[in-house]
Amino acid sequence: MTDAPMTAHAATATAGQVLSGYLTGQAGAFLRALPQAVGEAGARPGAVPSVNSPGGTASTGELLRAVRRIGGALHTFGALLDPAWAQQSRSELRWLLNLLAQEPGYLRRTARLLAALDSLSSTASPGESRGPGMLAGHQGAPKARALLERQLTLARTRAHSVVLQELRSARLHALADRMTLLVGETPLVESAMGRAGEVLLPQASAAFTALGAAVQRLPLSRATVAYQGDALHRLGTAGSVPAQVPAQVPAQPRPVADADSALATDDAPWQRVRILVKRARYALEVCGRPVAELDALNEVLDRHQDATEAAVTVATAARTPRITPATAYVLGVVHADQRLEVESARYAFGRQWPTLPQHGWQEWASA
Image 1: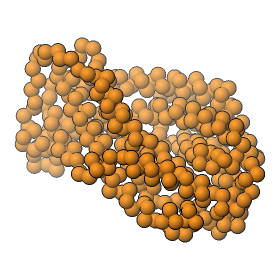
Image 2: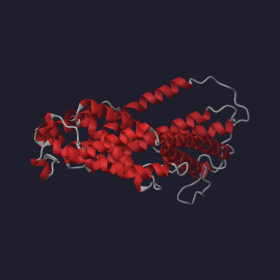
Image 3: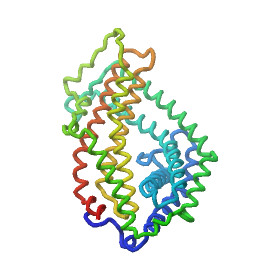
């Protein structure tokens, strides 16, 4: 990617024409998908899947893709648009994205945690590809599974009710009107009349510069060793004897708030990088040259995000009043498993990131 990532048309077009064409296409996808997505949300709880969900529907996927891409383009290239309109549109798109992400987030978390617990509780024989898990035969596993499933189902049902209410609100109709404006006439400013390569590339460069600076602040030196998290799922003969938990465990003071805060602080820089990777991806889409390495990094950081959220969910479940020590022990193992997944994603990111700067985006962005 040493040459400027602009198509032949974009090389002769103005920045406004390129940006307007991109936003018009995404706004059209938004408006086409919205009615079907609203109908799907009203059908039943769980009907609004994530873009990457195997059970996802085309209309909901298109809607979420359009929301993300329009919001990313407005952030990176907002200087080419009416500032008040761009800022308000970004806020409303962020509201809709957060709204639509709630229910599929609970669906993904449910699938992830129950699959992890089932794997950890597996009683496969040592001769099979995966031996017994760490929790094989543990008395607390069924109760922990039921607790997680019950709490996540309740949270998903509540999120579904909120989505159902908001998708029929005046706020959504107002956002749809904004997208209609994009299809008809993008509110560009005078600076958008410059040549695309001279105007768009410096702003795309800013997105990459922000991403590079955020990655430099990551503790990548701590993510240079592969974590053996799958060892919990295949203990072999050593795992054939289930761990025993005393019937009564003396209560010990736990600095819960401090531990949660420490993990949240540790995760925050990675979550910031995830957002910046998405913005860089969308900036290159506007310029007409997507990069596969960015797509791969995005997948890794999505996995990181899912694992961190799953770990928080398990930690919350473990603080449910009056659960048995055996159930709490199982939830602790599942929490550790998800944190190992977090470290695994960080390790994968640390191995993949160095290939991206080799494309030479620094050169064309500063040319």
